[in-house]
Length: 250
Image 1 (cartoon, rainbow, N blue to C red):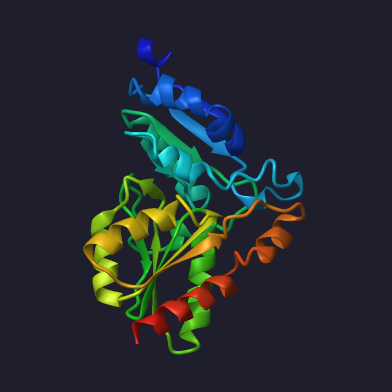
Image 2 (image 1 turned 120 degrees about the vertical axis):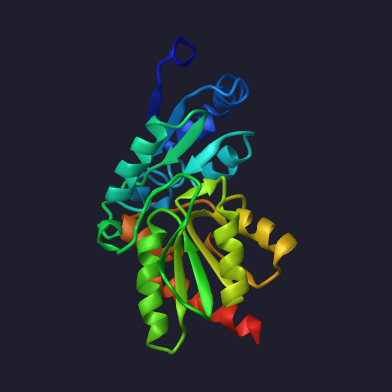
């Protein structure tokens, strides 16, 4: 379809789109650099009761290692709609990760919000630490910011909906201005957003970077809320990592 001038969007569970079909995506879409968007739904551990076999926490890492593959993970419904529209007009292979659970609507209420592939968005400013989130963790990062504010810690929050290409300019600006970074994602701490940020910062502007996510283990079966709580993927979990990052500056 792509070679005939159409723009295919494929869709299945993230574990199948990125895992079972990895070789086909790599060799049949990535290698010839075809204009195809692979949509992985039900990403992360918030799939809940389906358990570890269906809780895909490796897809960012798999997809971002394919040369030329764009990787996007919107944080809420409004941003998802804008991401789809942008990908319709994007030329090249792309991976779009979607969550299963309902998410709060907040991006369309933030002044100055503007979606652009490859460009992160500063949702709230701060001077002591930067929290860079993707997917459902962005909303939690904003709540973590409120927890930290009550303790006198000023946290900047960045919505990094595009993991590849990473908005390097925005990340390095945050590193220089706040001196500490926490990444948060519903993904293994290896290979995803945290890895991408750490790779960039370590070689360009070394500051403390703490990766918040699933600590290199398989998921668990339970309600979405219970599983997220089990792995510490909560505003409180993010706030705890932010305190560590701030302490490492001293």
